[in-house]
Image 1 (cartoon, rainbow, N blue to C red):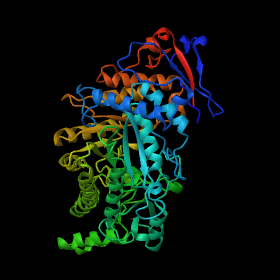
Image 2 (cartoon, rainbow, N blue to C red):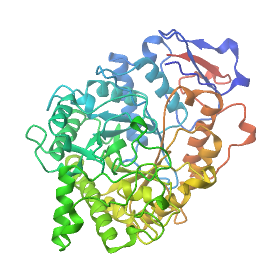
Image 3 (cartoon, helix red, strand yellow):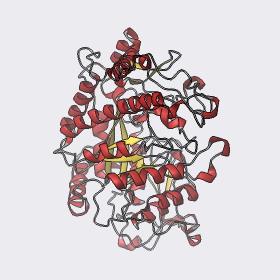
Image 4 (cartoon, rainbow, N blue to C red):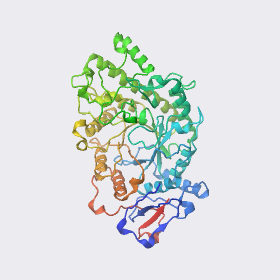
Length: 548
């Protein structure tokens, strides 16, 4: 991967340009303009010391990094002396670890991490894919490529957020590679298709195991919850020396895309298109049995035969259906019963996994977080149809995010929310969107429940307007804004020209508590980056290094 980073085009002194020979055909260029730094990142100047190794120079670098951490690192993730400061993390590529079980393009990764550190980024986030780690069979975990990454992150003085990704990669917005569930799990699914979520027409979704069988020993003698716990326990045991210092947050996957939701809007094979309302995912035999039991318990056996018959199809609009229209079935006794059951099962699923994770990581010094999807389309409709099919019982009459916020707060888990970069006016009128209204509602819920709130952008954005919107939403009238923000995602485009300058300015603004919401006009030609290894005799000049 060629990464082109240019931050001070007008100030480059060609005589001071240094080239590090690499194996890539197309070099990546990072320009570091001089300014007075608040920190120093030590980077060796020889090729041997510039990229990741496991020799004595690496160990020495790691020790220096550990010393730096003791002075500067918070005791817990998201806990900062300056309460207004919002640390920024950057998501690593989905294919950071290859399907062959190795770290993807380690030299390019090393260069990228060095650049991110120079920009003031707090750390990075990576998916620990179940489909890769436990690929070879039950209890056969391969953490080695992640160990290599952890050491590289430590060497650069960065922090790491790790996602326990129990879902497949592929079939959703932004998925650029395919990583299915472990082969031995897929084998069990082929024997029993009801292990995965199913819609009313019988379409199976292999993204994530149905929560209906959470406590059923369907995975070679273990329940899904036991499998997830064993996986997290293995991670803890392998990386115990890094937890709380380098690895500061564990985001616990609880559904498709790692989010606490049902796969109600799958893009695979064109099943769903924005802004369709989606479909309820409650037709596998385990979910149907649960629904029947819930209906029977209140003496309404006739309500337990399946989901709503009038809820429409994936790509319809609320008013096209009997269930979601303005005065639809959603607001009847039956509708309230079904939605309470459907959303309640999801909340119960999330709490079970988080209680398990809490027990595993409680003495490790890491924060736990859970991700909730930002489903902003049809938010202005009374029924909030797209949110309902995803499992969030949020309507004109019912707050669907307060129960989630209270559950997360109860267990000390950070509420991670998306679509922080979106503005209402950017959305098409026909979709009835309100991402700003949705973010405001979630902020109110987390404030009331006293849950920490962290954010992400839902779509890849590189423009100043998107960053300004994040800066705006990161604030809070009560003084408690976002605990952290994770930018989606590190790729080649991020390091290009203005894109890189916008990120650097955004990180600086977030470190200042979001006091500066617009990029200054005077900064149109360069960003103030600094690398601490530049000797005092060279500090008057801009350095340009061609990185791996």
